Image 1 (cartoon, rainbow, N blue to C red):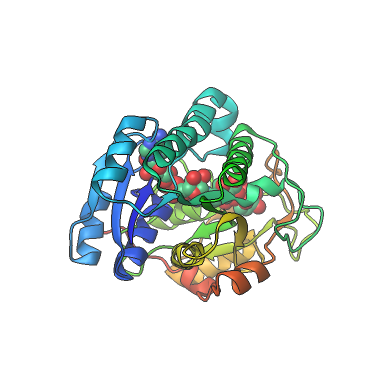
Image 2 (image 1 turned 90 degrees about the vertical axis):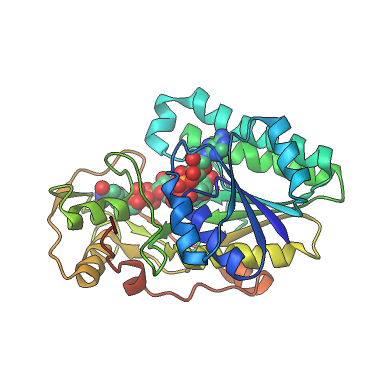
Amino acid sequence: MNILLTGGAGYIGSHTAVVLSEAGHEVVVLDNFCNSKKSVLTSLQQILGKELICIDGDIRNTPLVIKILKDHQINAVIHFAGLKAVGESVQMPIEYYANNAQGTISLLEAMKSTGVKALVFSSSATVYGDPQYLPIDENHPTSATNPYGRSKLHIEEMLKDVAISDAEWKIICLRYFNPVGAHDSGLIREDPQGIPNNLMPFILKVIAGDLPVLNVYGKDYPTIDGTGVRDYIHVMDLAEGHLAALLFLSNRYGWHVINLGTGVGHSVLEMIHASEEGSGKKINFQFAPRRPGDIASCYADVKKANQDLAWVATRTLQEMCLYRPVKK
Ligand code: NAD
Ligand code: WQD
């Protein structure tokens, strides 16, 4: 199949490009590089032994998206492009709604006008808000506490309406839990600008000596050791989940929602210890007050993914926390 990856130069998109390309699909990337570097394309070429088609452009440029869908005879779209920093979204809600929601409308307009009606959407466990029960299944009530999460919820609602409006659409919404880790080559990875907000990128910078100390936010949560628990999933497992989702969509119409996680939660201290083993280095950390808006525990019920997608996350915590120095 010919597959368009919006945001395909980003963290999850680039890993998915590898998996899809190795499975024999033709991958076309559309990215405006607002949160990724062009050097990712060279790395992808090194991994795959061939050049990927990449268009430097914005999903909000509807005529451009229409042209790409036509020129490359696209069969399905995986929609990663968007802004994703929770704190930043509180400061810049207009930019978040413009990029995430308006960008998705532009993409949908282009898809509708070209008759490309198969879509995989990158949603997030953030749409479950503060969990009412664990593990979280797809029927758990949704809510949002920040503009980023609300933009994901708005998009989900829009996509559901689109799928209801026209029986030819096939749309799957994947709700990712906490993606971590990198491709074995070490050539592609999560590479945030500045000081990372998320746990694993921060740990990696402390290991590399770029940051002096990790703040562990909260030590009095009702969890195994008092620190926050999350469902960390290896990004290559997540990438393979997209391949499974495309296969699923080949003969399913309508709207589908599926969690992608491991079903197992790990605490911040467990992640620190696994990263110490994975790097052979001691990680300097200190306890700090709880981070506003954080929840105690969050992990997925993955039965639906296992059954409907015939997909299961197989990589271990050790593999997720393996340290690969940046190749300069
Ligand atoms: P990322 O920032 O690494 O990748 C997103 C890519 O989209 C970047 O390369 C960026 O340049 C591009 N982009 C952004 N706006 C664009 C636009 N208007 N036009 C074209 N390209 C644009 O993020 P990621 O971690 O790979 O996340 C991918 C998707 O998965 C996002 O939608 C994110 O909200 C979602 N998600 C991520 C996580 C996570 O923890 N990483 C968890 C749940 C959901
Ligand atoms: C994990 C745990 C922190 C940093 C976020 C988004 C969510 C989704 C995934 C996109 C928590 C603790 C963190 C640090 C720490 N992204 N922590 N010190 O908060 O589960 O989810 O990323 O959709 O929307 O909200 O991930 O990695 O930020 O935090 O102690 O420096 O690590 O308190 O318990 P989170 P995270």
